[in-house]
Length: 336
Image (cartoon, rainbow, N blue to C red; front, top):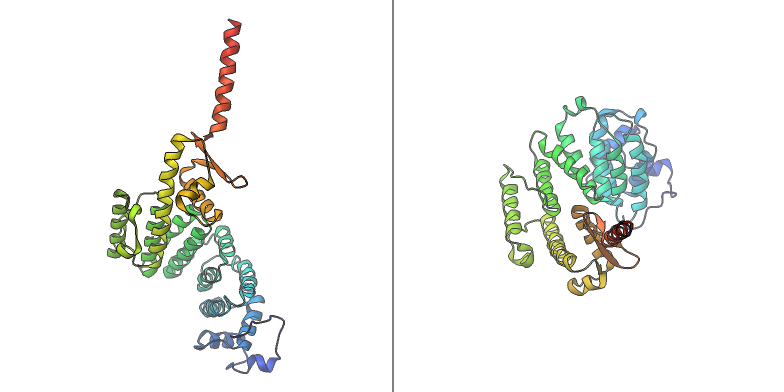
C-alpha cells in the first residue's frame, strides 16, 4: 500500500466486498487468510473494522487459526506506515483474548503481531495477566511452544529476565521438539550468558556447539578481542547482537570493579573517556544491565555519576554509620 490508510475513510459496501467470494464474515476471513498477494485498501479497511468489533463470545473458536493468519498478515502490511492502527487493534484484542481460558492460534498471532509492530508493552501486559488451564494445554503442544517462545521474547524486550527464562523453559520442555524449542534453548543460553548464569548443555548439536563456544569465551576472557570477522561463533543475528553487547558490558563491568577499589563515585564523562559512548542513554542502559545482575552501585542520571555500594550501602551511608559509631564511642569514653 503506497499511501497511508485513514481509518475514517470508509468506502461503501460494494467497494469493501468487491473482491470477496461470499457475503458471510467467515468466508471473507477465510478468503483473506488465503490471499497470496498484498491486501488491497478495501481488505485492510474490512479487517480493521472486523478486529475492532471482534467479540470473543460472538465468534466460532474453531476458526481461530484463520483469524490468526489474517492478523499476522494485517500487522505485517501496516506496521511501517500505520503503526497506530495496529496498536488500536492489538489493544482491543488483548481485552477480548483475556476472556478465553485456553490457548489458540490467535493468541500466538497476537504475540507475534506485538513483536512485529514493537508493541511489546501490550503483549507483556497480556502475558503477565493471563493464566491458562493446564488441561487444555495438552491438546495442542505446538501452540503452547510458540506462545511461550514469543512470550519469552517480549519479556526479554521488557527486561523481565526471570519471566523470559521461565517462558523459554516452558517452550523447550514441551513435545514434540521443533524449530521453536531449539530457538528457545538458544535464547535461554544467550540470556544466561549475558546475565552471568550457568550455561546448560543441550542435546541439540547446534546449541551444544554454541554453549561450548560461549563457555570458551568466558574462560579465556575472549570479549577483549571479540571481532565479528574472526569469530566463528557468530552465525546468526541473535548471537551477533548478544556477543557485541556482552563484550562491551563485560569490559565495562571489569572497569567498574577496578574503579570501585579506588573511588566511591565515577562520573559518566570519565567512563565515556575510556569507552567512547556517543550518548548517555547508551551508557545508562549498559549500567542498568550490569546493576540488574550485580547491584553494585546507584545511578544519579541528573548529575551524571554513579556511586558504588558496599554490602548494599553507599559510600556516604557507610561514612554516616562510621561517624555515628565514632560519636557513640566518644560519648561512652567521656562517661567513663
